[in-house]
Structure formats: structure tokens, C-alpha cells
Amino acid sequence: MEPEMEDKTLELMCSVPRSLWLGCSSVAESLCALRCLQSIPSTRAHNQNTSGMDSQNLVDDLSPKKTTVLKLSNGPVVGSRKRPSEGNYEKEKEHCIGLFDQWSEADQVEFVERLISRMCHYQHGHINSYLKPMLQRDFITALPAQGLDHIAENILSFLDARSLCAAELVCKEWQRVISEGMLWKKLIERMVRTDPLWKGLSERHQWEKYLFKNRTSEVPPNSYYHSLYPKIIQDIETIEANWRCGRHNLQRIQCRSENSKGVYCLQYDDDKIISGLRDNSIKIWDKQSLECLKILTGHTGSVLCLQYDERVIVTGSSDSTVRVWEVTTGEVLNTLIHHNEAVLHLRFANGLMVTCSKDRSIAVWDMASPTDISLRRVLVGHRAAVNVVDFDDKYIVSASGDRTIKVWSTSTCEFVRTLNGHKRGIACLQYRDRLVVSGSSDNTIRLWDIECGACLRVLEGHEELVRCIRFDNKRIVSGAYDGKIKVWDLQAALDPRAPASTLCLRTLVEHSGRVFRLQFDEFQIISSSHDDTILIWDFLNVSTNGQSEGRSPSRTYTYISR
Image 1 (cartoon, rainbow, N blue to C red):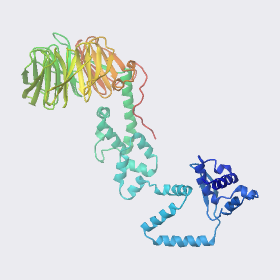
Image 2: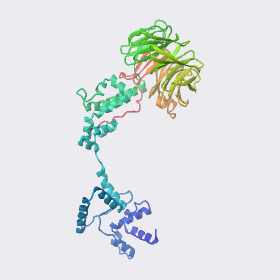
Image 3: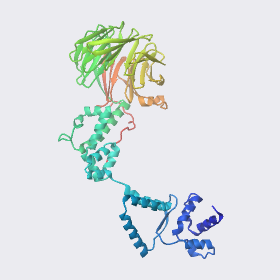
Image 4: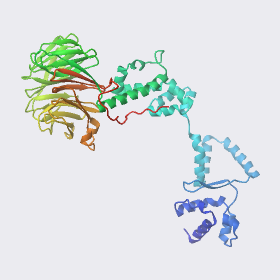
């Protein structure tokens, strides 16, 4: 800046109220602001006689031809002055507007752009404030007016419950779109499709019959679904609290084995429980009445493992055979004789079956049909009995008494890698996505990343061999020879920052013998034991007094009431 200009600037700063320029963050910004002071009369110039020629000239230049609003930096408006009315200005303004209206839209835009380019910063801010509300559109209200209700409904259908509640409060038109679009119904349907807990509740509480239907007389109004949503949230919070606090309703099935006692394996659905017993039999139980519906016999040794689908039951036995049964009639459809010793575990899915044995081998089978099952490949590499297998489209995973977990390619049956870490033999595992969870006779549970072979976490708490283990997206449930079932927080276990003392949520003690097998879902655990019982631990239908009290968990779902 030239010295002469700097002197003029300082003199002018002294001649105006300090509130006009102290809000500026720098001298450069102050100078920009002072250039805009042409429309503001100097208070000192009016109150004092100044001999300086430069100040007098500057005051003379403060022409009162415009209404001015001064905004320094990002602060508030600090000065303004109304423009005195002049006849010439009004006539010229009307003439300009008349010319402007005659131009094309493109010419009008170009003209306004040139006008704006000649303005200073505070004028730009004033224009921006003027334009901002003009550019806003209530498209949810505007779309139905154009006959596009379905687009407005589709936009709002992506909202979660909190946002949908807020949208209802915007105005009556938004509330109408939500109500007539049945958006609370659509929100519940979306949750049922994507969350197994919601799906299970819809089936058990029988409100699924009001979902996934077109608008007919059978469908309740939107208000029904609006009031249903918080009830579902309350049920979910209650179930989560029951899991964490160990509150459950217990049902017991006495298997009454005639010879040797013990239930080695089981699987269940909403209607039945199928169990494999030490006395060589397979018993099918009604899940509601707990009565024995059918007993399948044919194995000459204990039934150690089983799996079923809607067509067949496949069982493995200590008699070294695998048998395939028709699920409704109980008829034996096929008997596979391959292993030299007891068949300890098996899995089948999508036309593929994998069995493992005490003879240290793994057999991979192609299942074209229940009667057409052929051996594809035998996998060898373990140095002790192979106790458990699991697989998906990518990997077959096996665990053995030799303390190792081995990973094989499902498509080629080639060996991939070994997971080492357990100090004693491994009795159980489950594999899904990248995660493998295993239980061992070293009394620990380990979590593994199958892709890199790293051990992610070691869970300690059982006092004897961990015999069975299952996990879902939230929990790990394990059963051991100490007769205890433990519920672990899976997400916390995967977090290396979580203290080990926080991982076990609850220990359930009801079995009087070793826990051999368990399965669970969002609402229940079903377990079997050497004590010849099957226990159903129900966390949904819990009596009001409950078994134990504890703190409620932090809420995952939140409903905002209107």
C-alpha cells in the first residue's frame, strides 16, 4: 500500500465509529470494508471541523445516492442508510425494468451476471440472502400437486423411524403423504425382510399377516402400523435385556433312553426337534407339546451327528455309517459305507456333503439326490480324529484332536492353510464369512480370520472341554463338559480394545451333565446333554417375575414418539 493511501485509510478509520471496523480480522479486510463506506457519513466529519484536504474530499464523496447495508466480514449488519427518493431514479428504474422484460431469458441472465460482477462483497451477501428462500422448494408438497404422489412416497419411504416421525410433524401435507403411502407399514416390512429378529417376532406375534399385501380391505390403516412400531421396539428391547440378564423360561424334555443315556446331537425348527441319542436311535419331538412323534432306528451305534432339511435327515454314527432318512415317513433312503471308524460330524448344502471321522479323514460327497450320492474326494492331513467340519462355497474347514484347524478349497479340495493356536485337541467349530470360532479341550474358545489365519481373540471362562459352539451376528453361545452354557458378546470379542472381563454376558446352569450340542436363534437356545435331557431356554416368553435381575442393555433401536 502506498504511504499516502495508508494515511488516508487511518484518518478515515479514526473518523468513523470503531464498531464499523473492529469486527474485521485483518488490515486487508478492513480496507475492503472501508471501500464500502462511501455510503456512510463520517460521524467525526459532521461533528468536527477538519483542516485535512484529503478527509474533506473523502467526506464529499460520500454520495447519498443509494440505500446501503454494510456487513463486515461474517458479522452482523453494522450500518445502513435509506436512499432519499428521487424522481429521476424511479423513472429510470421503471424504464430499465421495461427493457429487461423485453429481453430473452438468456439475455436477462447475462445482464444480471454483469450487474453482480460490478457489485462489492457485502452486496453479494445481501443478494444471496434474498435469493436463498426463493431457491428452496417443498418438493414433498409440490409433487402431489403435479399428480406425482408416488414419487413423494418413494422418497419418504427411505427414512428411518426417527426421521419418519419428524417428517410427520412438518405439515399436514407431509403427514397426508406418509399416511396415504402407508409408510409405517413399508418401514416395518423393510425391517422384517432384513432383520431375523423382526421376522421372528412377526411370525410369533402373528402380525406378519398384515404385511406384504396390497391395499385391500384386509390391510389396517397406517395408524395401526404407526402404533405397532413402538410395540415391536419394546419387544426387541425386552428380548435383548433378557439375554443379557439371563431371564428365561425353561422347558425340559426327558428323553428316557432305555439303555445308555445321553443326547449327542440335535437340530430344530418352529415345529419339531430332531435328536440323535447315545442309545442308537433318532427321536423326533413336537416343539409345542414336547411329545415324541417318531423314533427312527437302524444305526447299530450311537448317533453322533445329524442334519436335516425339508426332504431328508442325514445321520452319522459310531457304527461308521452315514444314513439318509425320509423326513416325513422315517424310511431309510440310503446308507453310505466309507469311513473305517465313527462318523463324528457332517454337513450338507447345495448338492455337497462333507463328513469326517475318527479315522482321521474327511470325505467330500456329491449329492445329486437322496439316493444318488457319490464320493468326490477324500481329504487327508490331520494326525488325529477329525471332530468337526463346516463349509461354504469357498472353503471347507476341519478341526481335529491334533490341535489344528485346516482350511481346504471347496471347489478343488486342495489344502489352503493351517490355523495353529489351541494347546489341546479341538472339539467344535463354526465357520461363516471370514470368521471361524472354535472350542477346545484346553477350555478356551478362539476366534480366527480364515483369510490370513490370525487368531483374533481367546475367550476364557469354561472349566472343562468346550464341546459345542454356535454364533450369529451378535452372540457366541458355547457349551462345555462343565455342564455350563455361556453367552458371549461377539461384537465386543472382535474389538481388541474390549476388556476380557466384559465379553461373557451370562452363564446358564441347568444341565446336570456334560453339554453335548446346542443350537440357538434370536429367541431361544436348545441344548442337549449327557444327562439325557433337551432343554429349551426361551428368552421371549418370560414370566414377569423372571429368574434374575440385572441392568438393561444400552438400546440399539430408538423410537421417537410424536
